[in-house]
Image 1 (cartoon, rainbow, N blue to C red):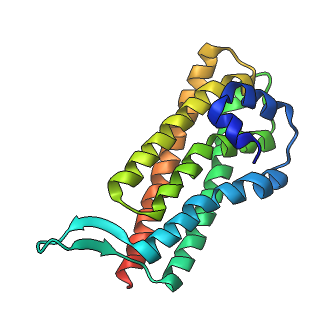
Image 2 (cartoon, one colour):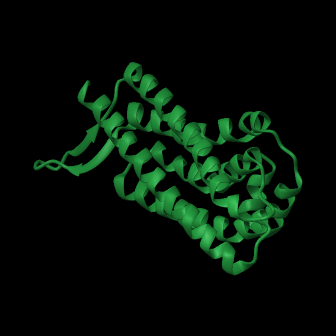
Length: 200
C-alpha cells in the first residue's frame, strides 16, 4: 500500500522502486490488490443498496432511483470482486506475453505486480460508486482511466528495459488490450447489477 501515494505524486520514481523489489504474487495480492479492489466493490454495494442508482427524475418531478436488495448485492459484489482480481491476473499475463520479444523480459509475477499497480487509479475512482450518479461515475472512471494510461506510458519502458520509442509501442499494445478487458468487465458488471435491480 505504501506505493499508492508515490504512484499518484511521483510515478517515475515509484516505478523504479517497484521494479527493484522482488514481490511475490501472493504477497502482492494480499497487501495491495485484495485491498484496492475492495474499494469499488464495497462502494458499489453501499451505493446500490442504500442510496440507489439515480436516473434523473420522473414526469412528476420525483427522483428516479433503482436499488438492489442486500442479499442480491452480496452475491453480485462477490462476482464483481472475483472479476476484478481475474482482470489484474489477465493483464499481467498480457504484459508478460508482450514482453517476450525484449531481452530483459520480466517473469510473470513481476508482470502481474505491474498490472496491479497500474490499475491503482481505476480502483480509487470506484469511491464515487458510494453515490451512484451516472455522470459522476463516468467522469471519475474517465479520470481514473486517463491516469492509468499515464502510469503505463511512464512505467512500462523502464519496467521492460527498453527505449521510449519501443516503450510507446509496447504501452499502446498493452493499453489496447487493457481497454478491451475493461470494456468486457464493465459490460458484465452492468449486466450483473442490472439483473440484480430487476430482482427487487
